[in-house]
Length: 274
Image 1: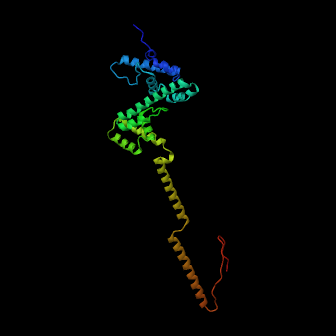
Image 2: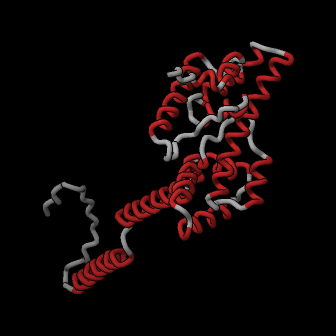
Image 3: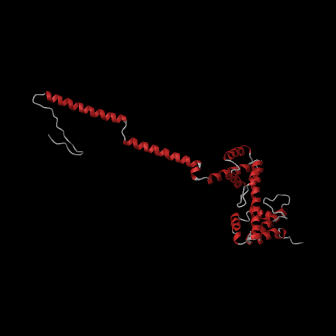
């Protein structure tokens, strides 16, 4: 029985990518282990599809690097930082070779994310082609959700088009299409500044409404109502009328003069005795 050839021998591009310094030894080992698992699954389930992206036997450098990114065997943040650090380690043709390889791999992964949107009938052919023409080469659209959000940011898909697309997906879209569109909507809301989020305006309106009611209640307690003011004025007028009548009556009595004295009383003090 001949020994099974190792995936690293089947895919020499992995070793070349490592030699270029675009992946680490640990990432290379992880990739080889992943290929071993895929090979084992295929040997036990020859008639079933493997539910993971596979690396073709004749894959080139771009396809291999794209496969590493797509399977997350090569974490995107570490990879992008590694690409940004290339000018400090290389120059001339060596630098251009590595930068071009990284950019082509990113475009390929991003293109696949856009194609998924088209396959799920979330975008039309014109939108797909426009998105292909503006694919970023310096960042990774790691999923169809990220691709859809990027189309919104770039203006390839307008906000009204997105809302119409969301409605159409809910009415007759596939389950995957609904998942993608809802996830993109949530991510888009999170990316909005606080003052632009719909919930912010609702909260602000409620706060202003509560403050308005509170201010109205405070003013109503401090300022008497027109009815109360009228009643108070009426009571004062009635008291004056009584005093005037008493003064007139006293003037009519013989030997008596009207009591026109004024007494000043302080709050809490007993009135003077007469």
